[in-house]
Length: 410
Ligand SMILES: Cc1cc2nc3c(=O)[nH]c(=O)nc-3n(C[C@H](O)[C@H](O)[C@H](O)COP(=O)(O)OP(=O)(O)OC[C@H]3O[C@@H](n4cnc5c(N)ncnc54)[C@H](O)[C@@H]3O)c2cc1C
Image (tube, rainbow, N blue to C red; front, side, top):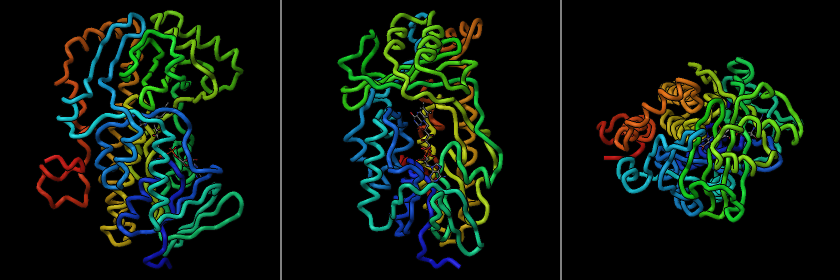
């Protein structure tokens, strides 16, 4: 039987896990974070955060540390990958901040991770255990235990699975197999800004959408670095090759792209190649004292740039409900699902729709380009409001509606 002060076990050491640990610590609750990798950390590329994530960062006390490392781009641009025409421009300066109360940021994942890890180390409530790959767990009804590949065992009051897209805990709880590949691969590269040999905007977040391929780029670390992501459809998406075959395939895919885009492609290294996958939305993320969050629960495609934002929103929501329900985990987890399922499923489904929109071909591309011509700032802000306005924390339901969102917007 678990005692009231038993730690909560958190499996995974990503952004969802660390946010949950910090949000629990804020409520005086101890946690034990089990990360499978030899060290806590992130892969060295960029990440975008919408304004919806800031109320959570504020509450877990890391906004200043994150903002010290982040940049606020003046706009998000979508360009046609063949002609270079700007199809959509979403200003993310003063009018955006005024509308959504918080900025849009781009930041190096390593810097972001450090900001959260440093905050975790400062509290006395979080035990960080690296090299702890969880390979089994039990739920006795009165508590949980997780076992690791090297034979260690950790006990706790409940288990939060934040173990990502290929979650082991999900395979046991939901049993719906591997993530869904969509036939695309992604390459990520970072170059020093001084080496950037392409005539492209250097401050904005730019997405070039083409038939079956796209590129996203933006600056990092106050303009010192330039982050490039190239994504395309290929029959080899599930295979491994060598650098020469990757390079040939990339050049072949982007042969009709705008010259500036081809210059970007020429700068790609092949150190990181990922098969693009997501998950189908499901209605249940918990069983007994075990619950899934973040990508383990609802991994989306990256088209809305919101997977990590959702994991972070989950972390605060779950910790608040565990606190509010006083360790009645069944009720806390049911309320967590009720609070989060429709919002995260919408992110999953809208990300799929946006994916098609980015990659429109033939006549569909003409329709896309004509449709976007009528989209102005007001239209774009209205389309994004459901996402960027944040979500109502279920523990604040009793407050009047105009004050009830985590955005804190009056
Ligand atoms: C190309 C690309 C670009 C993206 N851009 C953005 C963006 O701009 N904005 C955004 O919000 N999202 C973006 N995302 C999505 C985002 O990266 C994920 O949604 C987010 O990292 C999910 O966080 P998480 O904490 O749930 O899982 P993860 O970050 O995947 O963390 C899971 C952790 O669990 C550990 N782990 C796994 N299995 C075990 C185990 N059995 N035992 C112990 N530990 C384990 C892993 O080592 C890892 O540290 C992007 C994704 C991709 C692929």
